[in-house]
Amino acid sequence: MLYPEFINKVITQYISNALNLDFFSGYRDIFNARLDTFISQTKQYLVSALLGEIGNNAFDHNYTFQSGMPKGVFFDYMTFAETAILADYGRGIYTTLLKVRPDIQTDVEALRIALTEMISGRSPEQRGNGLKFVRKAVIEHDWHLYIHSGTAAAFIENKDMKFVSCQKSISGCLAILNWGKE
Image 1 (tube, rainbow, N blue to C red):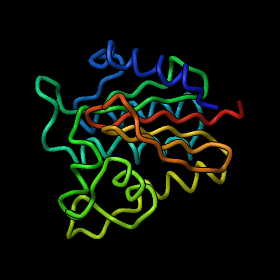
Image 2: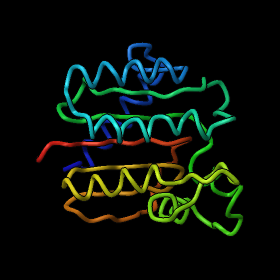
Image 3: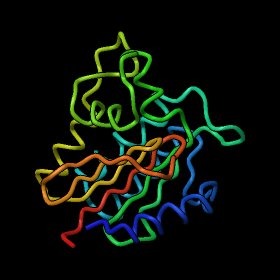
């Protein structure tokens, strides 16, 4: 389970270590090489597919980044057991989806749509299955997922999904995936 204290600890560590070159991948091929290392070390093939879907979104959907922050993705699977953290300083889910769904009003609505509806921020390309695949696998395997973008967060745990509005706003997207049973 991803307890609030743990999530806050991760957010604090992420903010202070975001550009640590041991974890930051400025290019897709560096991220994919780190993902290959994860696979060879853990043999967690399905988990690596989920991490790939989330992490590659940093490169697929971000054309602008928070001022002073580089393009890329933070990827740490070594600090916490059976847990991976992925984050970027990109546009965020709301801004990405607003281009193709101008009726979206809030970060929470955007995050719900991203996780439940067939939609792509790269319209007219026929894409948009990635986060639905992640959601389905996490629920089926009774894993835990936390995604925070803007002022919205989604929790998937105990085979249930809920969306909340947060006081803390995150530029881009932060995801915490735990594939352990506790």
